[in-house]
Every structure is written in C-alpha cells, then in structure tokens.
Length: 160
Image (cartoon, rainbow, N blue to C red; front, side, top):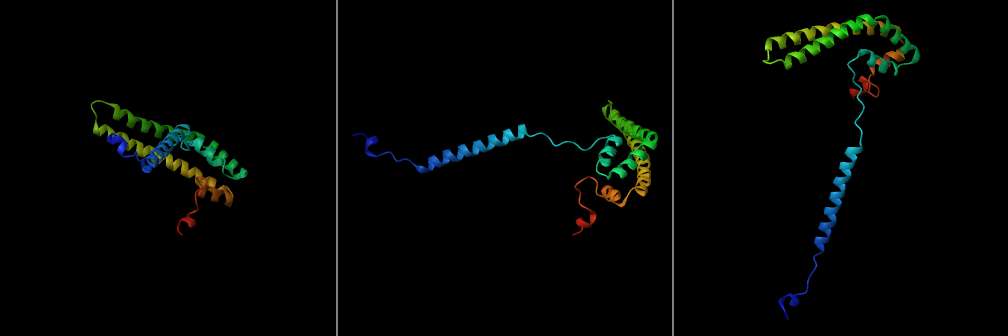
C-alpha cells in the first residue's frame, strides 16, 4: 500500500464555493461591461446657439406665451445674432491664442478681456429681451421661466 492510498482524499467544500463565487463575480463584471457598451449617452441639452435654447424653452411654456417668446426673439434676431457672433468669435480667438507657438501671455489676457466684454454685451442684450418677454407673458409662463430647466425644483422647495 502506498502513502497515497493510506489517506483518503478529502474534498474541501470551500474550494467549490470559491469557484462558484469567482464565476458569479466574473459574470457580474461581464454584465457591467455589456451594459456600459449598450447604454447610450445622455442627450446633451446645451447648445451654443441662443436660438436653439430658446426653442427648447418655448416648448415648455404655455402656447400663447411661447408665441410671445418666439415673436420677441424674432423681432430682436439681428441684435442677438450680432452679439452672439461677436461672443463666439471672441471665444474662438482664445482658442487661436492657445494654439500659437510660442505662447503669448499678453495676447491671451487680451483675448480673454475681449471675450468677457463680448459675453457681457451678449448677456445684456438677451436679458433685456427677456425682461420685455416676462412683462408680456402670463404668470404661468413666468413660473415656467423661473423653473427652467424642466424638472428643476422651485426656489421655495430648496430652502426646506
């Protein structure tokens, strides 16, 4: 009789559980990987174009208020386009300065100052138009503007 026959083989039950646990963990990770590949990215709600954002905003307003919004935006379209174009070209000038070799810090500061001024002009133009819009639309429309984007809690709910 050999020594191998003298001691009967004892199976350790813990090795089975270890194998089963490892298999379960691997399946879990494979499932996560497949879910990440299949999942589509969330749609972007940001657009540089003011007119695109205004249309998204108008879709959440009561119909009569949406018409007022669109009418005021259309009446001031030239001013909005002008300030928006100036702001976007100022932003692009920052990108251009960053791409230059050698880098010029003073040109960067000047481009940023130009962008700040263009942004201020653009904001003042759009905000002035929205003051006019807010004075013409219904209380429900003003509430929808105050709660933009959709699903946002009113400020009174945030304080609690």
